[in-house]
Length: 124
Image (cartoon, rainbow, N blue to C red; front, side, top):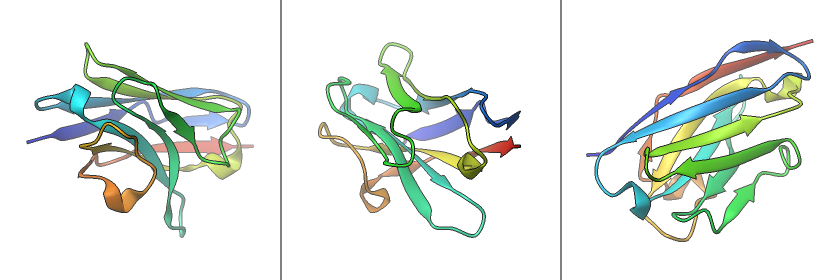
């Protein structure tokens, strides 16, 4: 059974940075593509970033291109979301997701496992 635990959410001011971490427990982390999604208050969950098993394919949502990056450490079984130049619109609960696929992840309906989420709040 796979479990995902997010950490790193915090309350920061606009322009600051946050680094989120997703810890994967279970077998065969390298078999999974990893993704980050977020849900802002009153809005649907949206794709933020995805990375395939060997970091050869990295995808970013339009709202975060140029500011966010995703990475993974297959030895430590972790995925990270580096968020720079944060805006108030980035305030959301951020969810880590895993998909048993080598291709990559962009759609939440494709994901096999989810974490509970970590809250990032950005204020003016």
